[in-house]
Image 1: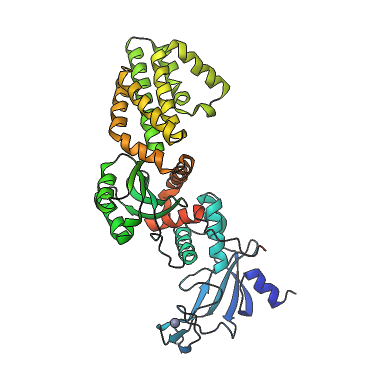
Image 2 (image 1 turned 180 degrees about the vertical axis):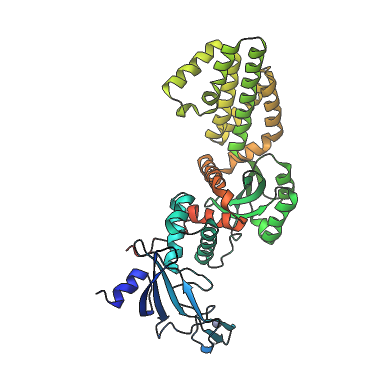
Length: 415
Ligand SMILES: [Zn+2]
């Protein structure tokens, strides 16, 4: 037979006395293993706030159950007394237990496993594998991250930040998010996308706003105005991916207009062919397949106007790929090109670029790595796709910290 030491390892508990084990039949015909436990003499009757050894106050609300990891295919529960203690510093509270964090219905091993799995697997896998609801997962992740940061304020030490909006809950709602460019983590998020929302961020930041040197964002006035008012010394920089998107949007608008023209003139074939070029035009040239490259090369002869527009879009990308000096010259050349190209969509793009030229130059001179900004953005969009399951902005922040902030706990029991 296995001894108690092995059983404790199986259950993932330490400083715990295993009193007995019982197998219960569940109503669904399954098996439930219940481990009756208590803290050992060293860990008994500790204050949940300061870990101090305290006097017993009363029996509290009686016995409690916690969920550890399953043992193979069998569900388990830990059951123990939950007495209250009286701490000289914190008053009366339910005593801490060595196998779980205060207030949690899950063991620490279980919570760490949930957090690790949530960081590495699709959400549906997490909920099925660990037999928990999605709300439980986000609650656990939020607690794990709060413990990992141990109350440290994420708004401390911010210098370069990004401000953006993301749609969540299937695009019905928006969150304003603030990213710390030093490590790419989300440091703040709140519902809404307007000056008032952003002002609550600056209220929380307080005097620390004076330390901000760069703020990256898109061209939205609801971001620019509060930044100018609350952190006037910070340089406003336009995020490269937003600016490049203006170029791809202009190109797409032109392509659609040309296809509509063709259809109107009864030329369905060429119109359909044009429709097929959409992704070729939008994708980065390095990502194109051989066939797509051939189509693009053909366009050079068959549709000179569209190909010219494509080259303008590509130069816009090159602005951010070049170093500051080269980028500035490329941008000036690009604006001049847009002005004289006689393509409505790109004349408009030229006007927009002229308006935001100083902010784009700020980006070029900021030394912020384009690849880094891009990676952060990609990460955020990926999180957003999963964000329909987030019930609070805090859960989204915690998930971002888990997947990108280096705060993911290791799987329990691995040496
Ligand atoms: Zn205490």
